[in-house]
Length: 107
Figure 1: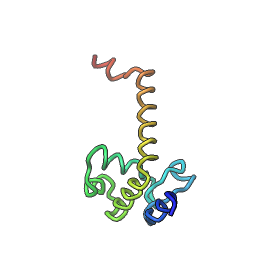
Figure 2: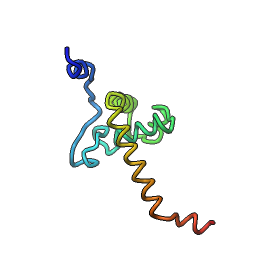
Figure 3: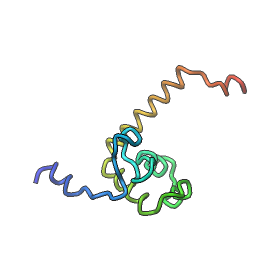
Figure 4: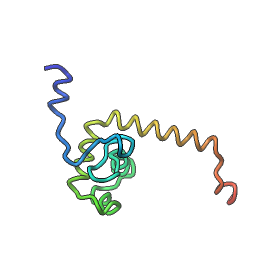
């Protein structure tokens, strides 16, 4: 069995995850919402929120959807983490080019 076949065999179906070019610019989202998988991943993996806390923050979600989103994230972690790094770099570049009005005001 090739590496690709092994990866395909390990990947699960994700009934709560959908990809539509018309929704969130084609980013994977929790089906029926605009909540991106990348956002759930950041809340869980970077901010340390539990699935229950994520549901508290997004009360229209259910536990199954959050767990499915996290499963999708871990199956696609390399590509999603790369997107997170790219977005952080864009934010750093904007911050570098655009001075903070708050910092200027407060001092």
